[in-house]
Length: 305
Image 1 (cartoon, rainbow, N blue to C red):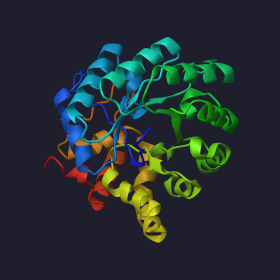
Image 2: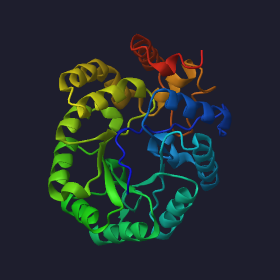
Image 3: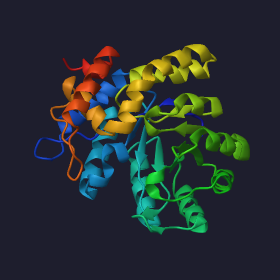
């Protein structure tokens, strides 16, 4: 692999029409807005894309649209997770064929109880590595209910060179990042965090070189990462502390609805609809979010106006 990915690779939200159907015109505007925020890359079809509310047909439509419309302007990571190793392989191969720069995979799980053991997880990523020619990122998130130990992740990284990116967003992320880098060293090409950047500064201190936030405030969060990587630690810390109240509101109260709310207000998308059983953002929380977004002068809240 000749290219090393770092910086901010935010999750691309999926806009819907008020009737719940895909809004593909708004999807293109989302991509343009995110690129205008100066992102280093994008990640499609992830949890904050509401991937768990999309049909297989819709996934295929969105993947093709996003990869073709971005058209190499920035690298795109395609999320291709599935409990079935065969289906996961097929999804990844299709993403690579369509131009994805990387795939992101959660460990194989289905619901809260059906999950692979360590050997099954190892074999899952072995199959993916054997089938692909692009990097693979493992997403280590509580949603899967799977405990990915540092020794297992390090073993996978050492044995399969394509599995060289790790998005860690578990309790104690910074300590896990530090331990993983210590255990696998140069085999870890890209240690990333997630969770809207709620522990970003501590994770950068632990060795993270990238973050995967929502699309809400990329123009404000990217400078934190870049400043830190360039050794401007104090400047990065000051920017992070300024952003933290908004990050906290998104992470603890809004979730994936925050980005859609601001994107609608800023004329990026026509509707902030989320699919049932997700619920709309409460009125008071929405007002607080928009007030903070305006005070921060986020590009997204004025992009389409």
